[in-house]
Length: 402
Image 1 (cartoon, rainbow, N blue to C red):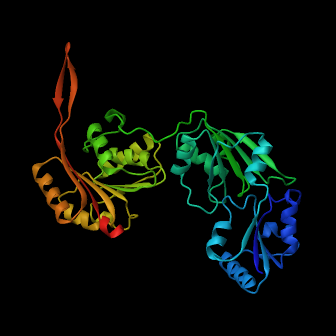
Image 2: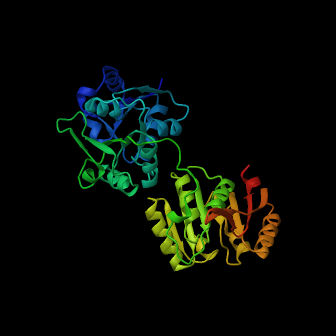
Image 3: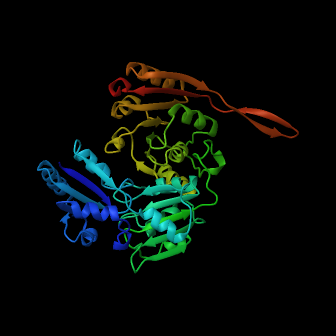
């Protein structure tokens, strides 16, 4: 009867190969392995290109053979097991565990890792913002690296996220004679050269769980002549948007980017596109992103709806300024999407009411927010009213996504 063994071969040195792994390799009719693991089998078919290897494995199994696929470390952690299980659904698969790279790395450092966040950049779309989020919210982070997301990249990412004070350790060629551990701050690691398949340990004594609080003080933003959504209105807009950590947000008519920054902080695993037609506004958006160590925000110069073409499909859209093109902007938004729009004139409020209702949006809410701030005058505090703001919110294309 056919059998597929997914064999964990440890960090790579033959001394780390378990007896069970050796038996699985020796009993198989054919072994598939990456080039760096081929010597462990003595004989091996290439795993690259992967699509071709999967079809050859399928053919061997269909013929009743026993096949072993060698993977690094722990087969149940960021390995080919998931892909093989999907592509070879219905086949008999047995996993043979091995010494994981995490085990080898942490043993070499002499640290506990049961409370660490494990992240992989190996063949995955890891972003600067995502890594910053994991390190900001976890005291210990373990990162699997590749050529695009190596140790130096991680160090530069942490610096860009304002996390220069964390501690790093880079583990290379674990279990081999030329194994190397390098410790230092991000600034010390950023200029080094490391094996592409290294591991990185990051410690942050100031880590705290959760996302940054919403409601940045207005005075913290760089401001010019461009209008800015004030703090109290911004907080209500964020409540209506209800973004998630992996949301993709369009901020149309972004002004100084105050809502864009709040959204970017709330969706560190996603991205924000701040669309603004004024050059001064674009400069302010970029400056505010720099001030708050925001790396998942893109300033897009141009007028909507034309400037929306080619942007990643959003899950959430905030329209702070439409330039009289509200209908065209709504029509340009891919469905489904959560949309929130604001207005300060009666005409614009009436227009948004009409547009939301005409489009058949679900979960629609219309509200006016009037805020007064206390100002000290002599020995007294007086309330100074801000302009009332109309807020429209709703889900567009929801019925199509059910």
